[in-house]
Image (cartoon, rainbow, N blue to C red; front, side):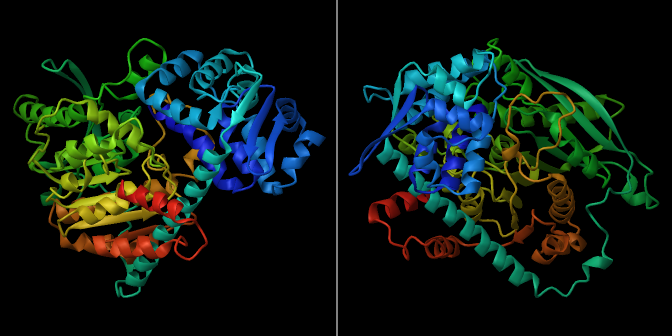
Length: 580
């Protein structure tokens, strides 16, 4: 499912860069076009076309011939460089993977949307032609490139729906401006709050550095036969006697569970598990077998079907089962006996794992909202809705996913706006920290973290904003070799090391304050501390309060929609994105 997001993002990323001219509209169609010529109609000026040969020449040698010069003259040197980079990009995917993805329900929806932009010679939706050209290009010796896609398109001419493309460019451009301005406004507020701090942070221990505890790792393989789920889990267990203070070093140790994201595995949060263990937390990092990297490898290889919507239920049940088994092992396994404190349990999750921990904290699936919004005509720039709408296929029941043993949660890049919604998120009554990255295009921060933050009713809540962080910035390097998603480097964002250090420090401070009831750690949860440890270009900000009214004022007052000359219909469309 995440693979489809990559292809859609390539299209939208370049729309953002290239603005409203002829070249930007051409690029709206670039990822799936194919033919000898690309035609588009621009009323009232008539029809325009561009040859594939011209693009190929530009891609290979950088030469702009007479055919391409009309369009190139309307772009900046930077835009032309970006276009050439895109044309040269080779996506290392197999034809089996492309076939599996484009024949899946979500993949078909994505290609249908692209087909509204990229029409066949007879002006029909380009769905079948796009899917065929993707598979053929991936199977070709030259691989899946833009130019090869053009060569494999089963038609001499592709017609670009210029009107639809221009509307997408306009809407996306405005929406991105609003996102950036909302983020900047919140960061400005956090900086203003930090100015009031009188704490000398330079004299406090640096929570980014490892703690004093040694730890050991134990691996278990649990089997929930009732659901046919095999659950590998790594336990990072502090060792007694690691510090001079005997009271602090003795077990039982507070327990933290970490839930990975889609197509990932337990090895991607080793850095966080080891850091927490060095601060006297026992950490259990499990794998969700229905949506982990191994499951996606099988799916992409054609050895298994698409991941099932029941993952929305099975993931939180995996953690419930894990806690039950650890309680059992605490009584029978000498290596764990008496080591875990089941009165002090916290949970951390990223992306789909963020959804997982939100449900464990009490958020319920919002079937009314899913039924209302998930239909064949629904479209949004929020790509996570493609995944969230899969929950609409679940049987309509009152699923009991909450686990009262979990006392605090930390959700990194969670998806929640539609599958949980305000009705679901507002039911959470325990301390929560939400983490958002400004450049996250899979779980957009305004939709999936900032606005949902206003729905939380508990006063002990925190919103950590990381400028220029992407959906992948918090994910550590896998030690298992299971990098199943061919994510382009542009989507990974800047060097992720600062983000790791932020999450290390914030998790220790948040868990110590609200799980261990140690108020001396509260100073690390202030905007002043975030400013103190921030490192360009991944600046960190922390907010502790943001009401729905404040958010609405920022949203409605931040964007230039009301100030610039745009048509009312486009203004309505863009504003409706946040309401969806």
